[in-house]
Image (cartoon, one colour):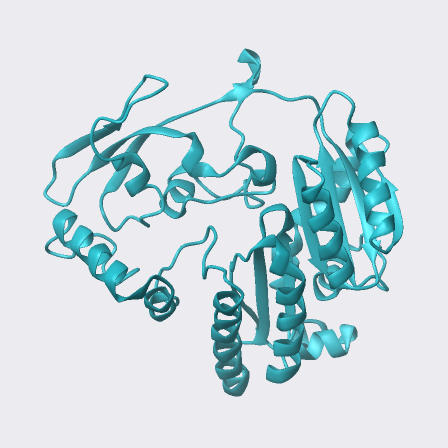
Length: 350
């Protein structure tokens, strides 16, 4: 696509290993969704094999069209429970200029979330606005040896791909300082920008190496047990983002487990990651309890249990809690119409 001057905007942090099919199945987002939107907005049409073997083609080539139900959107995010996508027609956009990144350190997650609220309220449109809490920063440091400041309580990464990104970063840096940033560091060029983004892109992988023991004693290393994680993807209104970060910190203390939070802060989509020793039965139980408590917290704050990862098996009970009995009945009716024998991704979602 590069030779045509076009590109596909969705930018999941797992871009090196994920697939277009997986992105469609979960209606995934990505680091740049705050400006460019999520996968669903770029799927124009699909070829889908139905449960009875028939081929269904959805979508159209015109810019507008409302003939019939929007079956394309119905399949995007259905987690393979309604049909098997075998071909997708995707929208592309003109490639933007190279983006520049700014890193801002904060003494609290609440201050960083206030900066996010102010940035968006004033109409800024960064191409990326990502937030990492102190647990995540420590994990990234241990994993990558990047020497990020261990003293920071929250690290905000922002980027602009406008024609004058340096000016936009200057304005955004002033907002961060006014919100309480202890240090604001704008990248000088694309190379420095990529170095800063590497911290965010490796965050979830870094958290996969963490256990409760290793966070207490970093020298414990692999001997701390078998690192395991349960990754949530709760999305809350941006106005509630600070309360959510504070609530997760309380849950980390309550369940005595590290919970690192990284967030697509520009749209309120968070990834709290519960870290535990997979060889410790008690920690496994507490991890599951913490995972559920995080979803409960998100719902209490007016959010959703999944912003982009889907329901799968783990979140089925919370899906019913979120959508309610009437909606759940309609969802099951749609599933029955497309897959009466229950052979498509059986047991998932419902």
